[in-house]
Length: 212
Image 1: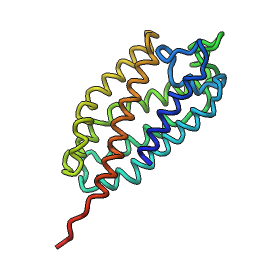
Image 2 (image 1 turned 90 degrees about the vertical axis):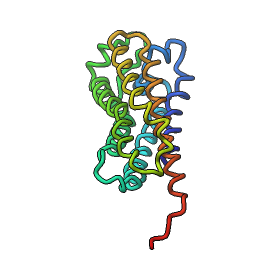
Image 3 (image 1 turned 60 degrees about the vertical axis):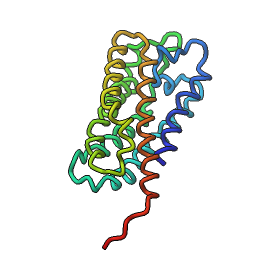
Image 4 (image 1 turned 30 degrees about the vertical axis):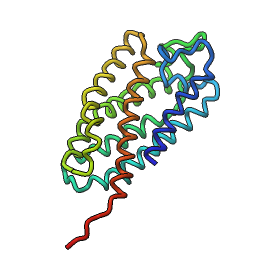
């Protein structure tokens, strides 16, 4: 479920970009614009993001959290940070009234609407939590020998993801390459979350030593 959720989430914006029209730019326009009420076939990204958010939540709460129980109280909040942040990112309601790629649509119109304001706050907070999750998560994983294989991804992610989030925050104020910065951050998070899901599959298949 964890792996499938990452595939669904990536499909939600990579595929939906192909039918947005010439005014939409993945470099400057955000992923959230794909969920605007005026975006074509808006049901597709909404469904994909919902599946990605719910799937990752279930993976983190019912798969990852029990698998890391042997770590005790060390950063016990980390799986919940992953679960809640991705669930929030998967929510597309209320809808943003218009896409920035539409004529007559402006950032002011988006942010003064319930959908635009909710998206800015919820998505911003959720993305920040997700970007900073690798640090406590690795703190929990490092005490478990069977999870050392994800070190090559989670250790760099502790620095890379917060840095990328800072770029997203800066670009949202400057209006420069915001879409690109957001996509690089989201892709980075999908990679390390997917690696956790794959590792969980491998760990679960290892034969357990008999208790003597």
